Image 1 (cartoon, helix red, strand yellow):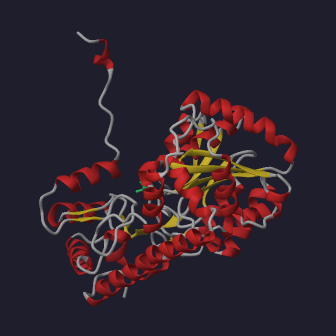
Image 2 (cartoon, protein in one colour):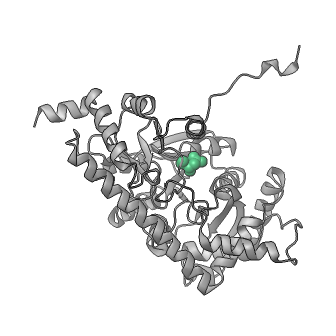
Image 3 (cartoon, protein in one colour):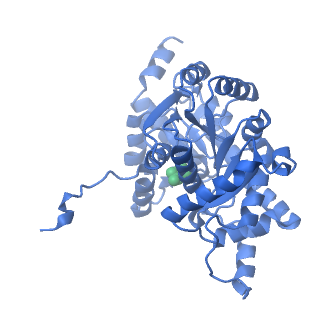
Length: 416
Ligand code: LMR
């Protein structure tokens, strides 16, 4: 008899379970539209050439050691990452009111930031968009938050942002509630607020004294422009908010498994920086002690050299343009087939994902009959599409939608 018999089997993590099922599937034309990772036009992962180049140089560099990093990571990395987020010339940097801490990718930044807010500011309520990246909930609960709430975000009928619902939910939020906001390329819907909408969100958050916690997982990847994708965070900073932002370098550098992240913290008074740094040090010390070096070294080298930085900016343009092309291609195929429903939302959305509007039954059909893997919410990773499989995927979607019509669509069409 084992004392461990009390341990019950937990549920699988959908996105990784699908990746495993895909890998095990022997069907030749299988398609993986599940995990949010870039694939090139041949369906293959892409190590960015500038990353490969740096790694080769690093392999030859005998001065690089495997000594521990400081608990808060590479100082230079964090400074560069925070400057990339806020913009080099942001006055808060010159005023010493913003700083960064190296973390275990975006997830680690979310966790450390949430623990800081919970332990030291005693915040307990957090709001995430409905829907959101499914891990937000768990990370905040594990960090000590006790009251999870959602704000409306996606309107299923219009396949667009439910802005009235969002505003109403924020208006009803209690003071000091932490609001998780996606900096750009909202995961899973691919729909971001417009500049006017961000302004209104900031108004209500200011009025209700809510705390912005940005999650920036796609800077540069969404539009191809670093500055454009940082608009919302910079706008909130300009408005005078104190805030934190979790930054991931998984997608924009293709460094998924190197866990390169940064937690940026913006304050209204630089004199608070030393105390916060010291408390974050203790949070990290008790969690994983200090972060890994490899990925942060690569990012630091690229962000600190004009020539490498320009090469990297070309790479993010390649990735974001391919996504945009595939959005167009999928919509065109669906329209060509006369697939019931409207498909403009696929091209209006940005970033890796499209929230297609496919129902759970339709998703099951795609997986079972066509070996096309996607989340049951209907989210697809657009990068999983390429010129060789987009027609196949569109035909499969058309079949699923025709065989198992969604009630909304059926009603909408019978009215036409
Ligand atoms: C995704 O949303 O697919 C990625 O961010 C991978 C993950 O950790 O969920």
